[in-house]
Amino acid sequence: MHLRTASWLASLNGSPRTGPTRLVSILFVLALAALTSGCTRWFFGGPKVPGVVFERANVREVRFDGASLQLAFRIDNPNDGPMTITSSSYDLALDGKTVASGAFTQGLSVAGHSSEDVALPVELLFKDLEGGLLGAAKKKRTTWTLSGLVTFATPVGPLPLPARASGDVDLPQPPTFSIDQPRADGVTIVGAHLVIPVRITNPTPFDLPAPSGRASLSIDGNDVGSVRRDSPDVVPAKGTLVLDLDTTLRFQDVGAGVYKLLSMGEPKIRLEGEVAFGGAVVPFELEQNAKFGRNGPKSQF
Image 1 (cartoon, rainbow, N blue to C red):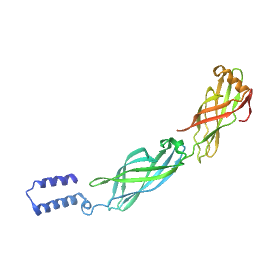
Image 2: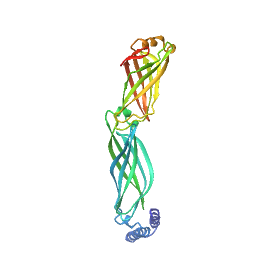
Image 3: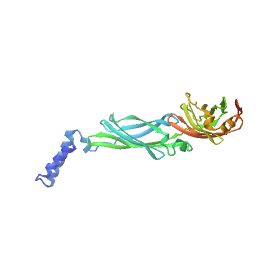
Image 4: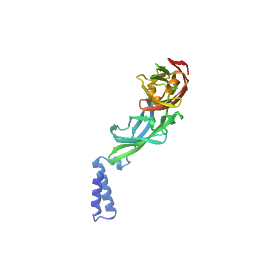
């Protein structure tokens, strides 16, 4: 309709008509174009602008590495005829920092003088927070903001309207770590099998994914290699799990002094590493004194 009307106006520009006669002709052509195209209301009174109203955010799931939200919008059509949403786009920010963008096409038609609910699923990843999850956990909450455009099809072209929503999400607190009583199994003049049990305490109201631990081990300042363990079990909500980090030492590799510490002394055990819970990684540093005997530890830490 727009292009056709423009061409008619262009032809009138070359017409010899002047003054009131020409004005009447232009108005007649515009009215005829509106009537024949079915767009009368766009020229006489115009349509009413539809409404895009944010209603609520449902937190569907909170995990250690993120949260799943479902945002509910209401689309109000105050016009006689239906209106169709053709596309939507959005930017997602956490604490003011844009962390994701999205766009998708839609074919939702909203009947005249009615409303439709639109659900938008959104994934928040805590690793996108400033300083990561551990840095943000001290705040205990994060603010999310979604801003975007909802585009409607109209007889005169696309009509983009702004949409905005915001809210807060509680951040899960990270797990804590401590060393249980270590074991030195089968200490001989050749070597020993060391087990360093690391207790993981989960303060959150949901299970943590099965942990996978890695750490470098030193005994009284002597670097003796690394310890590791993958657990098949989750860390229960508000519960604990012991992850036995272990390694086999060969004294010819780590020195005879380590053998003496394990068999007669009270060495200082130090672990520096990380535990992965699915996609979230939590670093740790632990240090403790132990008393080992020839057949194992003689006393608790």
